[in-house]
Length: 314
Image (cartoon, rainbow, N blue to C red):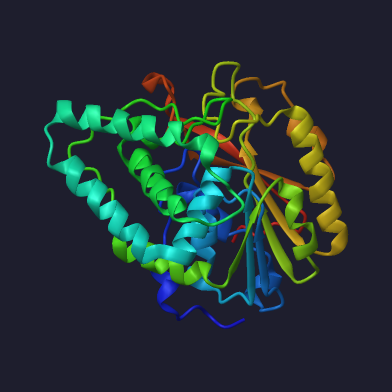
């Protein structure tokens, strides 16, 4: 496989994302399947795209013939599709939001933030997530604005699908990075963007595919499930269903990697993932819990990396 030489090598996530994988990219890169490095894998699939840190990272290194990304979060997929289709109009919309916001003092910035959030939520019933329209551009600008100016850079929806994160008091937030949005748009031009459950990517996986699963974390404790990125939850039954799909793709001949929080961080006797994925390769690597509502509980924890191929750690 040819090494990446295109301008998209500079592309990076355009949203802050709780649970984002930037800090673990080195660990992932040490565990890439040898078939990818030898050019025998030409297809990349990520069924929980989220902020896309690993997707952007891999595309800096490899020139895939095909990429497919998927997520069940309608707002997130809408944003990816807008950047691919109308990046310049989005940049103009964001520039206007940024100028309006930064021209205000802190108290007025807070009021402006809630005005944008209210408008974003009020327009939800009228959004057709299956048909592109000009309202998508305004909505994506609002999503990026809210994500860049809200508390802790969260992307959290309530059960009604409304964005409910409070204001964050940043002095000089980066709301618009037009160069990065253009780089992201260039990369997305050759990427299939799917809306739906992780199984939606089934028909885009074959024996020449590398698949990375980054599902919503199994909560580390009963009080840590505050990062809900879609109006539906992701429970143990969904983790089991994901295991079944992991196994299905393994049997197809794809190379598959999955990461998740390690329940043993909180309960040494919790072997949920060890039991579920007992036939596969499971490793524990150190990670830092970057987002927690209690600052005292931010610190080092273990992250699970599970693969269906022999691990490579040297």
